[in-house]
Length: 121
Image (cartoon, rainbow, N blue to C red):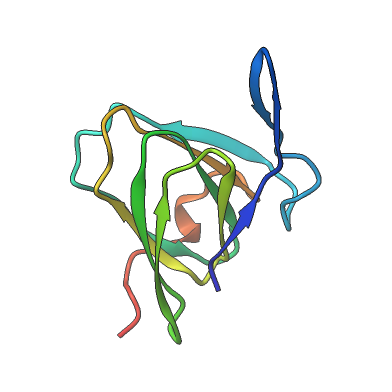
């Protein structure tokens, strides 16, 4: 099931630093980010094998998740919160705040055949 992990924040007089290191339950093979969001919703799918980690680097959004047994809603509003999505977690993102940048770290390279667009009934 989708869940949040919190990353350590390193603060000093120069600012804050958050590192994503040795904390994800998978090896990262693909990295991308979503920004300048004009659509009301993004996502709306799950995967056959790809796991993902979502980080709201800037701004905020809401992520709806459903793994066929449980439904959860996550508020992504801090760069030290990481939402781990298992392949079976159908998800959609919405209510994007102004200037939101959503970083996605994925366990697999892009493969159109890995996507399942139907939500669970």
